[in-house]
Image (cartoon, rainbow, N blue to C red; front, side, top):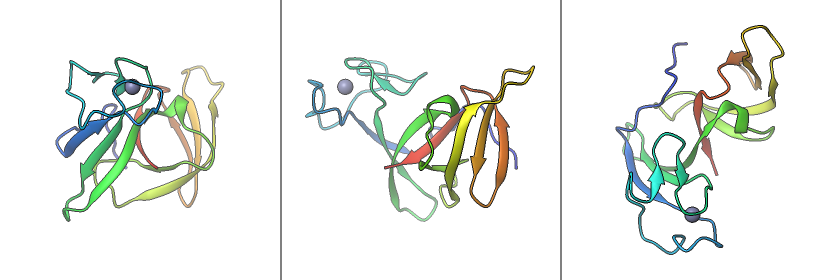
Length: 125
Ligand SMILES: [Zn+2]
């Protein structure tokens, strides 16, 4: 399956910070560039990952974090592309220890994946 290093943002509807400690957590929405870093998808104020509301092709809303492979943990459910219909469970997430400095992911029903550590995935809540 083909995937892009950076996910498309075409279906993004809204960004919020759900870190209760953050003064922006009560904001109705965060503005791109002003309140969040669109390269890392983190809140400019607290540095935590921002919550993103996305629409899938059927018009259903998904609430996700946009995380790099190296920030995924076992038990996370992720989507590998913008289709958002293809959620898989992460079994393992660790450095691949190979010469290409890749990141290793073990995904349920998919198997082993080697990706760039900063390759982005959508993770559900
Ligand atoms: Zn914040």
